[in-house]
Image 1 (cartoon, rainbow, N blue to C red):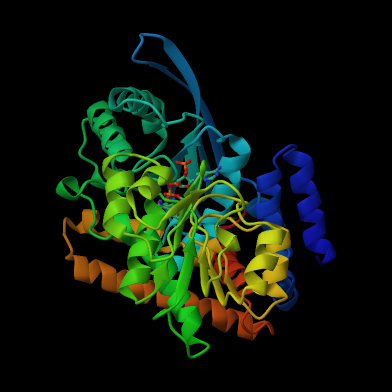
Image 2: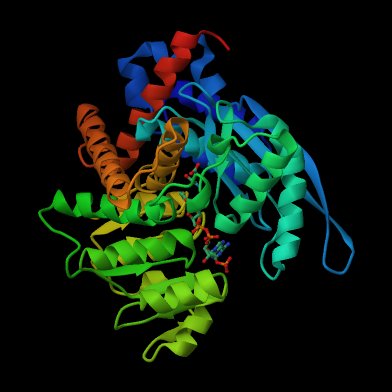
Length: 445
Ligand code: NDP
Ligand code: 2IT
């Protein structure tokens, strides 16, 4: 790293102790910005970098709720409003037992650049709670969401901050959160949340968007080598919203996804994942991948090793951060994998990314490859603002065009800065310059 960004990074570590994922996310961006700062010295004026790594606002609150036994439970809620240079804060809510300030800050930081890449006029934010939805009843989830929103509502709004889903937050949770917001404010403010139900302001394609976009991005990468997903073997990790619709789009493009996973293990299904069964087990029954394997002839549930050990042309990490390490990256490269497109946020460790970047494989970071979800959230806000409802085809066509633009913008920037084919540098510098230019024009705030 050039000395200027090294100083900023050292300050981040000092100021945010014991926040390893936040440090990692900041490091991954800063280490690629050198060429942009060298070419345009204005980017280190006015403490621009120091302001960029400091969230505009961090909100932490108590979330008390009563479980089905009548016992009071206490969780912690977060919303980090990181950067509003390009528009209202925008980003998901994550409900997972691992959530803490560090995790929300890393996600919020990534979101700034991702949202800038979409070109949709949205700032970056993220929130969530250490509430663990696994094994909770619908009523418990509802009471938790109502308590969470009873504090959060005063900080958000369709022109201020617009949350959506992430791990552990899907259509059910967005419904309960929206209901409580509407009750507290006495306003049907559709644009305050995205990922809403289709009958009350949601957009077609939002459910599918992240997984679809990740596969569309992979297809664009394949095309740069005159190849396509048609006939490709694909390994997918995760089995939630992103993984399911990555499987669906990969199949539509003629590829064969052969794995899924969750935190208990993974499934190898050499004949190809049965999408209908996967949706039934995960979306209807809220079950596990082991339930899928027990009902699909030829599919095996495994707890040894992981999905990255399977021979493939394309790898789609769609579960969680740091789920793909150096050894996994070596295995993928050795097995001839051609493309890695990240559906999850920061799923590859820095060591894994280095292996990818040193190989012939094409690697796209999550902030570019998984931007389809937030892109379609912005399209949902656009529909809410104009009280319009787009068809599935129109929304998917817009998603596809924007994913292609993101892909092409990353490559054009990489080329401009002398690193052809480097999607990491391309994504970071494209997102950074858009945010940085707006911040400079807004003055020191
Ligand atoms: P879901 O809650 O729908 O699914 C998460 C999946 O990942 C589950 O299969 C879950 O398994 C698995 N998982 C979560 N944590 C772990 C862990 N620590 N170890 C192993 N497996 C784990 O979430 P999404 O599909 O929405 O999110 C997946 C990833 O995609 C996240 O990184 C998220 O930030 C990112 N993302 C999501 C977007 C969206 O629109 N939803 C948009 C852009 C990125 P288990 O049930 O066992 O926990
Ligand atoms: O990480 C992400 O981009 C998301 N979870 C989606 C955010 C959104 O506002 O749709």
